[in-house]
Length: 455
Image 1 (cartoon, rainbow, N blue to C red):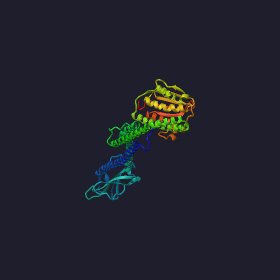
Image 2 (cartoon, rainbow, N blue to C red; image 1 turned 120 degrees about the horizontal axis):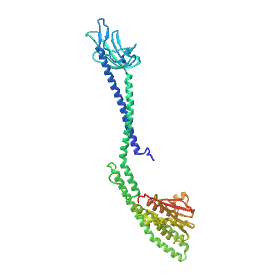
Image 3 (cartoon, one colour; image 1 turned 180 degrees about the vertical axis):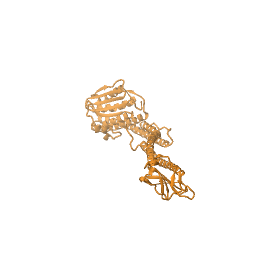
Image 4 (cartoon, rainbow, N blue to C red; image 1 turned 45 degrees about the vertical axis):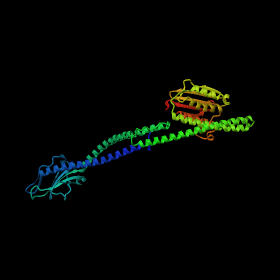
């Protein structure tokens, strides 16, 4: 399975979405944790204020000026030393405090007022940071002023905040996974038109007559229109080029025939050397013309995408019958092992032209034997042409298969014939492979998969 790389639009969109969701949830975690801590502090402040009012309700000063608290808060933590919950009543040198303070005191508060309860965070007993609620009260009008203080350890608030933050982090992590999955689904849905467009481009590449469909989203419709216009222009230019090449090739056939007649007359007149040179030039020009016609034919096949299937055996035998009537073919032994039921997805005339180029090459360079075999299966059809000639090395095979190469680059008539064969077989959605033959020469294998676009 191939995974998309960092240059993939899907990976970029998913990474951006996952990062954006992560940052948003991280900011949410920070803000919600902070809000929860502030909420807890307000709740603690309200509870401390309630306990302080209970203290004030039971506050009394006797005739000797001594303080007393008849209704201390009922929370048992006020009775446990260093419990984190404390109260204190101060009036001059007198002080009443909860048992939880033990030998400690709450901090003085010069900022306390008789107007209302105030809250602040300050250093407290046992080196704790405490939330302190305080107020100055007068049990009797014009009497002694008493500082009422109730405090709670801030560590309790922070512990509750940490617990909430941990639970919230787990929830938000799960939410991040869910939202990332939703982002993945959104990206897949958003890129689906591009996947469809890619499939249509593959069809356009294999069949120039195809066009991208118009039913695409409005955002990519201008791109679709531009590609279709480019395909129209390309098809028009290719058609014009093919027509000019075919016209040129057909136009050269008559002068070449006239030159061939002139060569025969020169040979009859005794100018054998001049006739030989003229025949070589005519053969080279004729090969080039035939190659150009074959390429024009291949372009026509590729554009038409035929749906026909042809029995291979009769075509092979007909081609061999023609080659056997040539000077070099008459001296070769041809072996045919092609099943009568073997069908290939190529039109008869195209298959004849394809096999003609290959069998003629094999016969021309064979020492004695040329073998043509074929097989068919659920995977597709194959034809193999072998000879007992000198063969080709791997680098030479690649060179002679070069498409649209010059004659000297393609290796003379052999390379040109194989190049023509490659043009034709690829035009029919097949594949050509060169290798070493069991007979000792060149092995040419043609493969057509069962599921071809033409089928």
